[in-house]
Length: 351
Image (tube, rainbow, N blue to C red; front, side):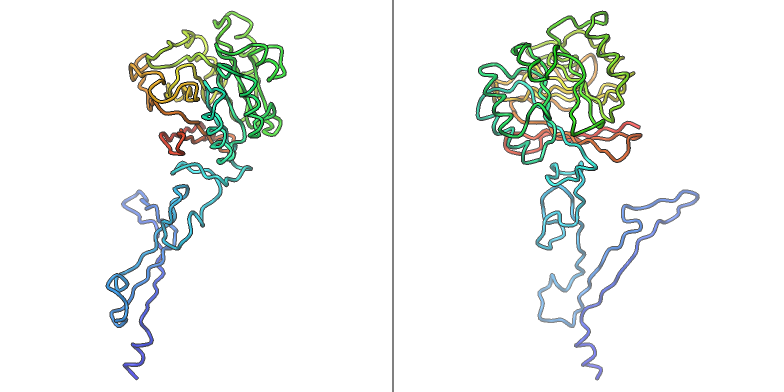
């Protein structure tokens, strides 16, 4: 009887709960607090299994968004929420009631590279596309047709006029009689507002453009607000210098609770955090590719470090806006190159 009992019982299952441990007057908790982890121990009586199976086997947790089978059950990301994650690459089946996804790319052209970028945007279910200028280098009409064939229409795509663009064509796209001002999409309600700036015209603090933008930004009730401009306020030394009006517009952005400034013009990727406000150069369209993209001749702007500066890589920047709490705004982003590789990850919280 003794031998039979131990032969039948060769697997012991233990369920352990981790609880916070108080250290002095401060409670210190591990990342496993209040979580159950299952441990499986195989006894030495099971002699028909290899040595690995005789050791403790501890299931690993899924790392959401990395598209790997972390818990070795043959499934990928199977237990993950469909909300956006700052880990890995963007989840392509996110919860649209909790996340609004935008894509940003400037200096695009009518070529196969644009088609690839739009296919990447479609793959990740980008809901709103933002083009911070220069789409009419060779054939703007073909570019617009390509956008529309991939589902990016006037209803979900913002275009800012660049120095290679026709003001008339941009105004027609925006259904507006000017190339600057607030842009909102019906599908996003008050979740997202874009404020287009035309740097081809007078850009100082005294003109009508500034006054109109100031009024619109200050009165906007949108959850997330982004300023969009072609010629950048902030850029490292490259082919094109800054537009020179940072001191004029930056205070307006901060007073109006702008969440980020989306720029282009220099054909490269740059990301700054200027005292909590994201400034990015997203000139990663395929008008120029590889070594033809603009050099990065410094790594700072007015003493502010470029957190991530990349040239020679085309791609699209994807940003997920978290809609869970208007009082604590949070977004995460990724710069994805033409091979669907993430070259930069970032996140920002305001609240």
